[in-house]
Amino acid sequence: MKLLKKLFGSAPAPAEPPRRDAEESVLLVPIPALVALLLRAEQLKGAPLTEEEVVRIRDDAACMAMTAEMKWQLEEKRGYADLDPERVWEHWQVARLELVEDEG
Image 1: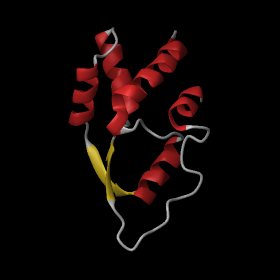
Image 2: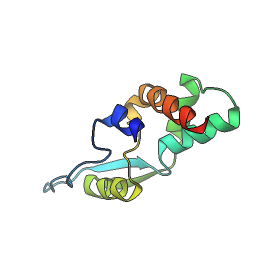
Image 3: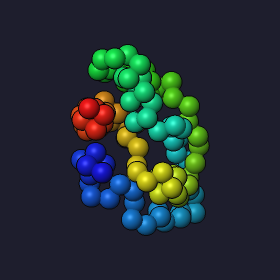
Image 4: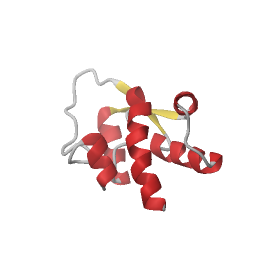
């Protein structure tokens, strides 16, 4: 998928599971994926989302706490890595171009 290559390089998800550390950190992972939430919100709006709307959707998203390995397993099952919540606006700008192109 071109979108994933643009966002995350050649592999949509890590090639191998992350190493287990003695003290594994817990990550907050949006469920459903941010890209799906943003795409649906834009479809309902019928116009491009603003940066403020994208950030609000990210901030209001339901999240699940999981280890890095659990997140990797989710991405493998889903078939793609989600947008980076810390760079959601920039990643959404790239993602939406391809997603809108695929719809049209």
